[in-house]
Length: 155
Image (cartoon, rainbow, N blue to C red; front, side, top):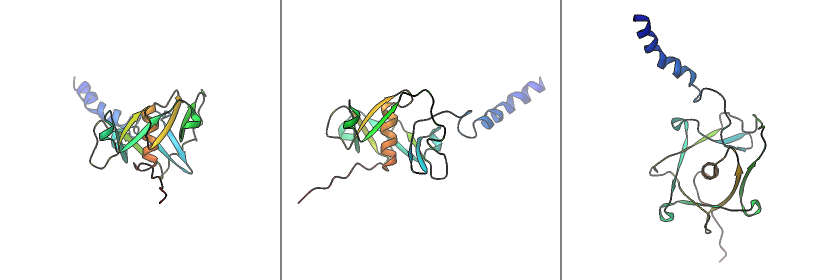
C-alpha cells in the first residue's frame, strides 16, 4: 500500500516532466515565419506572450478580419495541402512570439471580428488541414501587434 501511495504522489511530477516544454511531443502548430523569427499559436495558454480574443459583435472589435473566397483578394493566404511539412519552416528561437487565443478579452488585448463581410482591416484566405480561420486571423493580428492596418489618406 505504501508503494502505491508513493507512486500516486510522484505521478504528477512525472507528468509535469513530460510537459515541461508545453507538450509531450513535437507537433506542428499553426505558425508563420518572419525572417529568422516566427509567430506561433502557443502550445499552452501560459506560454503566450500576446493574447487575442474573438467577438461576434463588430462594435466590440478592435480589429476586423474578412475571410475571402479567392487567394488573390487576400493580404494573408494559408494553403497547405501538402502531407509533409518542413520542420524548420517556423524556427523556434528567442525571437519566437507565442500567440494565445483567449476566451475573454483583457483590457489591452485585441478583439477580432472575423466575418465574410467587407470593411475589414485585413483579408485572409485559408485552405488548410492544420490552420483554422480563427488561428490564421490570430497569427496575423499577433504578427501586427494587434494594431489594425493604418491606411493613408490624401488631403
